[in-house]
Length: 479
Ligand SMILES: Cc1ncc(C[n+]2csc(CCOP(=O)(O)OP(=O)(O)O)c2C)c(N)n1
Ligand code: SF4
Image (cartoon, rainbow, N blue to C red; front, side, top):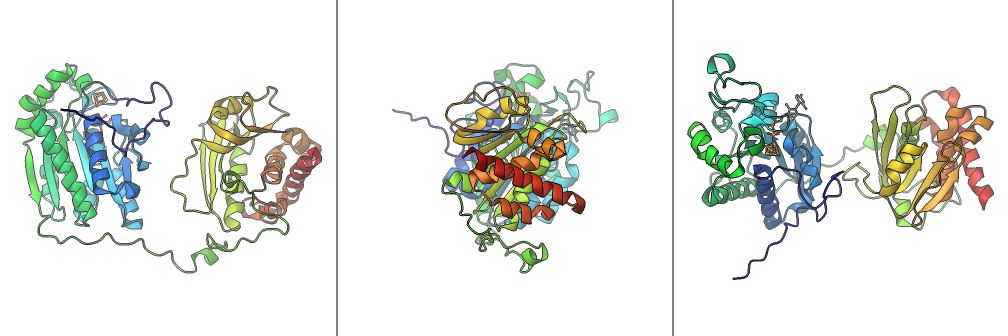
């Protein structure tokens, strides 16, 4: 018999988001249950034909990086908040399939309130609850599901009910509520139980596709590392120790009572919202300055931009400016800042997307345009620029030449030009002018006209106007 092994299409081929190590393998320890459960989820999603509408909400815990692997819509929620985040997603996109994936520290300790209320409201989502009886990621502390007498790093003499209470049976707790449609507890111990888990995950997702209501599948899963035992023993340990406390089986299945119905379409955008926000509706005719055609290169017309430098160089404001002007011109935009805790001098970067299409994720992994204001930023983000992409760098501050030959490099002495205008801080706006002039993303005049949309102090506008125009003129002088 020939066995064909292939990876589910709902996984990425290569885990590009994984920053280090082998990008073809997951980061989980040998024998960990997370990988098995991920596989079951992806297979069900592909079979149900809902990959393009599934939004996976990752928890905090060992599966915090689940978004490295799933070729789905991915959101990483704060600890315990996945059901609340999932609620928001499902209410705004009732036609999406929402999966809240949570460990026991995440769901049963830090997010107790969120799971209880999401279940009680009957949010139409699927919760996959991975119960490994400890906090895996943080080194094996006691969790609410830790067994009586179980030794963990924070219960070295064994969990004592008198001191720490009894193990929380999550499936039973949720079963006390009226709204949920389907609740089942399964385990990953042997072929039979693995098959049961696969079926339960499938059913829970199927019910969501049929718009039936809230489902929770609790999976007893091994954490050989946290338990300090061999993966094979770990599976036996679940059987012998966990199953008596957390009995397997279906606690509730009301699927047959609730008729299937189509997922509701997305609610319309409130009429008048764009007028209220004082910008044209996305897709409306752009009000571009005369004589400024859109760039022919689609990547430059709808770019993914990374702007990076030191805090205090106006990196975030430049990104905000790109997004604000784009919005004023009727484009879909996103701006995602990222900075260190320092007020000044730390690193800062932002991801900007400008597009004619709805923007699924504001993250920019591979950029079409990189703007670097210092050498560490250039070195850090240059490898992520797509071949053929454009690199703008402040040549007054960066004394090395960029390394790659498959990109277009534009050196702009932004700080020097800003100094000539009397204010070093305007270097970011000099760069703004250079970027739009060189790429054709917007006209310089569009930027100048819309400066007030992101620079709130009116007295600063004249200087910034000069700076944008100076950057544009510099590019024209190179021609
Ligand atoms: C509010 C908050 N408290 C604590 C932490 C630290 N923390 C990170 S992961 C984790 C444990 C997660 O354990 P669990 O949910 O059981 O998932 P596992 O790692 O076992 O898959 C903790 C306590 C945090 N990030 N945020
Ligand atoms: S620590 Fe435990 S839960 Fe985390 S990856 Fe390792 S085996 Fe899995």
